[in-house]
Length: 158
Image (cartoon, rainbow, N blue to C red; front, top):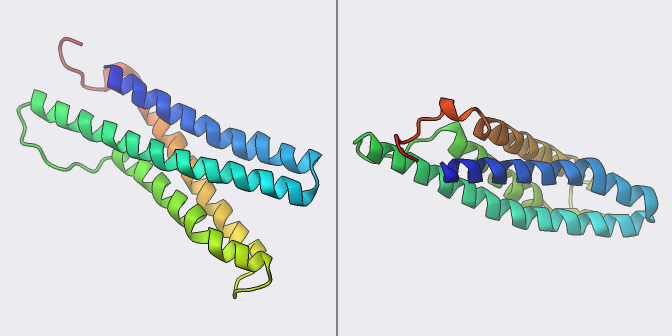
């Protein structure tokens, strides 16, 4: 039962972090700092978000895999890979981190310097799209993880 709660807490904290970055920190930085300084601050926020996102995504996937294994052992089932939303949503979020942050950093820097075939605005838009998909996936995971405990099959004695 503790692992269920920890999974729900981590998903909720990750979702809250993403909402704070998008809704509070980034807009506040551009509201009070010069554009170049705000850009540097927000870039640092997104760097930390990417690092944290990969860590939390991996932890959440490991937790779900453990919960699946424990459930199968309880029910006397043979262990097999089960791809459910609780496993796929953190995977989707991690793919968005890799594609939306790590894969686009080089091209975005080149675009800032006037190089490359894509404009900075286009790459920034793609990055925002990945951030939005990641946020939706994490919030959906938090929502699903927070469903009433009666909806989750638990062992008889927890």
